[in-house]
Each structure stands twice: as C-alpha cells, then as structure tokens.
Image (tube, rainbow, N blue to C red):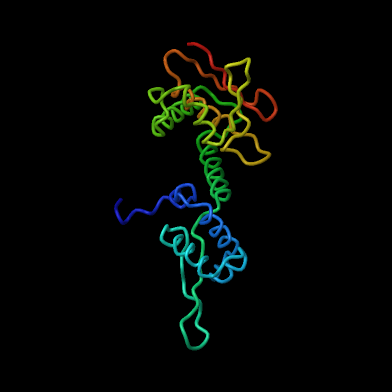
Length: 219
C-alpha cells in the first residue's frame, strides 16, 4: 500500500487485530479513559500487577490498537506514559455511515415512490455493489447468502416450513426511521446479482412490522 494512502478504519476494529481475550480486556479498560490512562490505573481496575498490565499494553501498542504519549512533565524525572485507545467506536462509525447513506440517497431520489428511471438506477447500483463486494452468483449463491446477510447486519432468520428468509434488521436505517424506497431497490439489485440462473430472489420490504422478506423460488 502506498504510504500516501490512509489506513482503512476496518484495520483498527478489534476483529481485525486478532487480539487474545486478555488483550481485549486490557483494551476495554484503556477505552474507558477517553483522555488516556497510565498502566498503573489499568492494572488497578483489572486487579493485576502493573508489570502484567504494562506487558499487555505493550502488545496492544505493537498491534496498533493503543497509542502512547508522554504526560506533561511535573518536575524532574522521566514523564509518565499515557496510553490511549486507537480503536474506533463501531456504533459511532455505523451511525455516520448511515447518515452518509441517507444524504446520498436523498440526492439520488428524494421521493416516496420511485419512477421507472429511479428504480432502474437503484437496481443497477445494487448489482454493481454486489459485484464489487464479490457477492455474485459465481461465489456460491444461496449457500452463502444467509451468512452474507448476517455478516452485513440484516439479522436473517428462516422457518422450517419455508425457503423464504426474513430480515429482522437493516444496517442502513436509523432507529425509528423508515428506509428510503430507493435504498430498498438498491438492496433488491444486490440480491438479484447474488442469485444464480436457477433461483429467483425477490425482496418484499416491510411485509410485516419490522420485518422484510426474501422470497426465494426456482427461476
């Protein structure tokens, strides 16, 4: 990666850092101090020896999860070290992405009902999104669809007597707000691109309160 490019935020997520349970515990303790914390403070909170806490913190520094700065000097001697978490707040990141998606959506189609042109545009955006994400039919179609929807935050669920998939959450809406029809059409295009020639996937937005449904049938 060229040095001029910023580091992707996803590389700072704990899931990407492969931290041990103890490292996660220490990181959580550091995160409780927005202005940073000394190793002694972390050790006291976790009930461990300061050298043990410092060892885990050093591992977090090496992993890029924690930053270290010197505290303002108060007299002679070496200044104390302050450790600050570099890990983003996943909830805050998601909410900002949602806000951006909402703004872009209103710029593309600020309507409660889509005309043919807006619908076609949304479907094509969804198809391109699926191809860019590597989620097209050639990568497993329905075998991986459920896992993909789960990982994306749609909270999918199935019932024993049906091939349909219910979506109990949407990663693109804020609490209490309805998603834009344009955004639903984008998702429909994404799903169409993931289906193979033998399968038809139809998105039915908000078929029941708080639930969208994917109708999956032979093509």
